[in-house]
Length: 70
Image 1 (cartoon, rainbow, N blue to C red):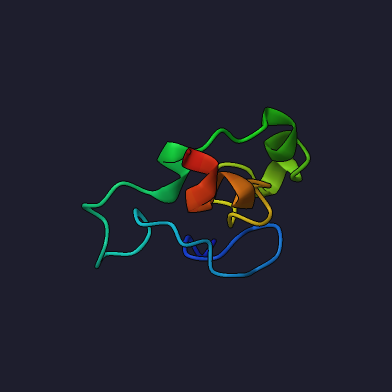
Image 2 (image 1 turned 90 degrees about the vertical axis):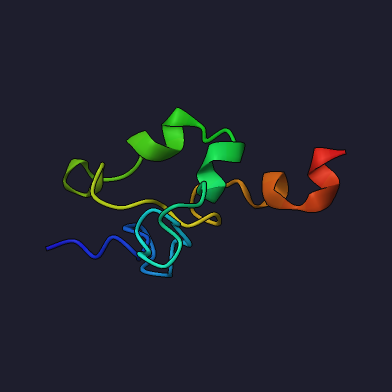
């Protein structure tokens, strides 16, 4: 069974609001960024579509910084 609150690539908390019942009604961080499809394709097939990547493994940390939105 896959733990939906942890990144399948590194095992860190993925910060997914949808996987956390306390925040499931809030939009997830991934809705406001663009994840390169190549990053997802680099995951082994058995890990895809099981749990969200963390921002670091999704290579979107810069997009999540407040200065990136200006």
